[in-house]
Amino acid sequence: MQFPRPAPGTGRWWLIGSVGCAIGVALAVWLGLANRLGAVTWEDTGYKVLDDRSVRVEFDVHRSPGQEVTCTVQAQDTAHGVVGQVQVRVPASAQRSVHQEVVVRTAARSVGGSVRGCSPA
Image (tube, rainbow, N blue to C red; front, side, top):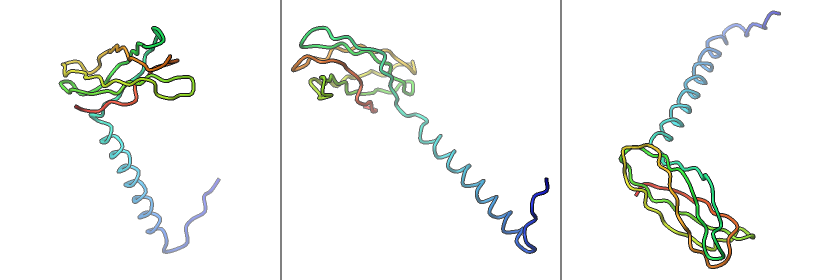
């Protein structure tokens, strides 16, 4: 199968457009990767409702070694309303990933708990 040839005199523009698209894709990938390096991430690993006034939330925090992080942990009720919240300080350490467990005191019975967000302290 033969591909159609570009009209005479337009080959240069096809080349310039192709190179421009390749540079744009490379720049987008580079900016995306640069934005994620050193970012603080977390992963909820579980929760357990202890009683009508508390829930235990477990999570992993991934950050640069030596970086202190503060995480907001919430407990939710059946309507996904926040019934408890606590700020957790994760101290700096040589490890990139650390496991955390925290008990969140609640105003009413919760049905779940999760990390709302983490940021450098």
